Structures are given as C-alpha cells and as structure tokens.
Image (cartoon, rainbow, N blue to C red; front, top):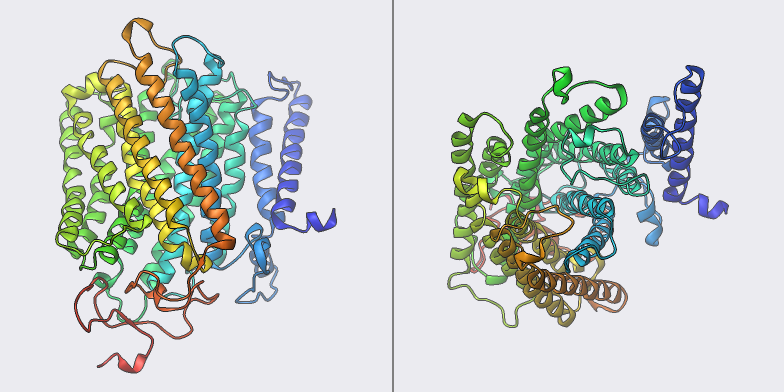
Length: 620
C-alpha cells in the first residue's frame, strides 16, 4: 500500500478525496451552527460540494508534489535547477519539469477524455437512431449530450496543449519552456478539473447543454450543474497559465538567427492560439462563476426580477467561446501547414501571409461573437455589423487554403501516401466543408432559420474534425517516432484514416440534411411524421464506424509502442530542427546550441539549410 501511495498521482487523488470531504464537512458544520439547511437532494447542499471541490483541488495540488519546488523556495530552501525524472512509465504519473513529458501527459489525458466524450456521443446517438424513447430518460439524454460537448472541448484544449508543449521548444531550439514549474502546474490542475466535470453526472447531471445558459442553469435544482461549472472554471486556469508560458518562451528563448519570419509556421499558430487563450479565457470563467454565485448566494446577475439580464451571460460566454473555436483549430491548421511542405517537397507558398493569417484570425475572432446571438433577442441594430465581421474572418482563413493548394500544386506527392499525409489532406477537405457551411450561419436572414438546427451541429463537427481531430492524428503519426523511437504501423494507419474519413462525411452530411429539413438540435426525440429516422440510423452506423476507426488507432498505438519499426534518423527527410537529432528525442533536447542559417521551408532548393549546430558557421 505504501508503494502505491508513493505514486504522485495516487497520492494526489487520495488527498483530493480527503480535501473534498473536509470542505464538505466544514460547510456542513457552519450551516449547522447557523441553523441553516444542511442536507440537500444529493446528500449535501451545493455550498458544501462547491467548497469541497475547491479544497479538494488545492489538496490535490499540494500533496501531489507539483508545488514542492515552490514550497521550498517560499521556505528559503535551495531548489535544484534541474530534476531527473524516474525511468519508465512511472514518470508520467508525477510532476516533471521536462516539457516533452508534460506534452505527453497532456496528450494522453486528452485522448482519455476524447474516448469518454465519444462514448457519451455513441450512447445518445443510439437513443436518437429510432423514434420515441429507447433507453434514456430526457434528463439522462440532456446530461449525455451536455457532457459530450464540454468533455470534448476540454479534451481538445488539452490535446492542443500537448502538441504545443512537446513541439514548440523543439521547433525554436529551446531547452525547455520558460517556466517549467508553471508548465507542470498548468497540466496537473487540469486533472481535478476533469474529475469535477465528470462528477457532475452522478450528482444529478447537467440539463442545459454545454453552453450552460441561464435562467435554466441558474435554478438550484442539481448539484451536478455546479460541479460542471466548477470543472470548467478550474480548467480555465490551465489554459491561461499555459498560454502565458508559451508566449514568454517564444519571445525569449528562440535559437540564434531565428527571427520572427524564420520561425516554423506551427509556432506562429501557437502564438495566435495563446494570445486568444490568455486574453479571453477569463470571460468564460467569469460567466460561469457569476452563475455559480447566483445559485449559491442569490445574486441576480442574470435574473430580470433582480435587475439582471440573461443575455449578458451570452455576451460574456460567446466573447470567449467563439474565439475559442480558433484556439481549437489554429494549432491544427498549423500542423497542416507544417507537414504539407515536408511531404510534397516544395516550399510553403506564401509563408509570411500564412503566418500573418493566424494572427489575423485571432484578431478578427474577437469581433464576431454575437453571430451566435442573432435569435437571442439582442438589439437588432447589432446584427449587421456582426454579420460583416463574421464574414471577414473568411479572408485570413482563405489565405491558408490558397497556400495549401499552391503548395500541393506540382509537388512530389509521395506514393503510397503516408498516413500522416492522408490525415493532412483529409483535414483540408473536411475543414473546407466546415468553411463552406459557415457563411449561412453568419448571414442574418439564413441564420434565423438555421440557428439551433442540426445544420449547426454538422457545421460545428466539420470545423472541429477538420480543424483539430484530423490534424491531431496527423501529428501523432508524424511525431510518434520522435517521441518513442518507433513508427506507427502504416497499414493499420490507412485503415484508420479511410474508415474515419468516409464515415465522418456520411455523419456530417446527414446532420446537415436533417437540419435543413428542420430538425432542432439538443432534443430528446423527433416527430415520426418528419421522416428523420432513416437518416438517423445511417448517422448512428457512421458514428460507430468512426469509433471502430479509433479502436484501430489504439491497437496500432499499443502494438507499435513495443513492436513498431525502429526509427533513429530523419524519417521524413525534414528540415525541422527536431529531426536533425536521433530519435527518441534526447532528454535535454539539443547537445549544442542551435543556430538558424536559412529559411524553414526551402524544400527542393539545392544546398539550402535551415539549422546548424556549429556557431562558428553563422557568418559563412
């Protein structure tokens, strides 16, 4: 038992439970002393569960070990600059200051949550396959649907952090992130956040959808709704602190000679993503916190009877949540731009325009939020300017598409196509569907009819799959050898891609079809007279085939970790710095200082070089 308790994750989870119980007991004692109601529908009041969640989070972080370095500094003790991680898999269950370990921790956690969120989708998708009630109650359906949305969003955020943490220091020639301890803290705070989010299910569930709109979410009927808000609020700290760390790292720790327009394009995407996360994430935290306070203390932020306004919540929520769409997709689009020149052996067309387009998307993304509110009852004169600003975001996005097409044009496309390249091409096609289905949502006249229909669900899934899921798998197939020294099996990889891509097109087109026919989203059942059932059966089969493709990927992943083809050198013949050293990546990244001596994407140009490890050659 002592050996098990010595594992930092286990120790942290034990103290999370102790902290939760202690916080609940404290509030129960205070309420008992004040002769207030102590027990609620779910054993204890919301006040007890929320305070217990806060105490449990702090207890987890304090006893897990991620804050030990800070505690030593605060006490005036000396703390070593570098720490050697334990050998084997155990190092991933404890605090590490190595950005590569942290990146893998983020990625594995993201994949686990991706599986959980996908399972929720399969459950309620099966319920929708046939007319009438099958096996879920309306409350259970609402909970599955709501948690599917938010768990997937948190999964994507963690997946993005995994890619950024692992890749950015390698791409810029840095030994690590600027603040390694803050980097570790940013990851480990996401663990209790995910636990509180999932704990909302046994504590009554969530009935509001992933957006948590009041006045429904402000009704103190279910403790689960509070834990839903608390989980997202805590997860927001991970995004904010991680974004701050990334920006400082890129600004201060680039290799010699790496000017702004010599940075890899993925780094530009990471910067744009971090600027959004740093400046906008507090808005969703604030909006959810205000609803929590309204439930806990009777405040009237969104209660018209107390002078509040429910539409204020939507403004705060979407001011983050639409820019957050670009947080989800910008790193994915960066992966596409990063990998495409490698496989077609041509320079990235319009490199500077592509770099600036990421910042352009981030900037314009802050002035488009209210197109989600055309049907909300907000002032009508705001509709037209937000319509034009929303359409404007297509310009920097179009720059990326034109660059990709021009880069592919007359390129040396490999045959057979590697799985990573297949997912890159799949990402472009799926994201194009998301882009083409977007303008009708931005135009007031069409959005008034399409809003809250399954058309929006189809558009949303096209954007997320094309902007993140497909690029995420492309990145895994491409950089897996760099992280492990082994290659994922290409035959299984092709099965994974073709099954996922074909099934997803069927699923998303089915969603948009029933949406155009008038089916609303977030509903438990539909009218048998409308003829939706056949399409829903097809969509359900497609969803299970997507799940099967993910199972194939996991079989490939587990098998390749032990039996995959060994890779030592530059597998993809890439110019990128991380591929100039042996695989798997050495513990301290680069043994000699990295110096940039050329352009990052001059593929096919004889004699050109991007990086050098000999400082004496800088002046050559």
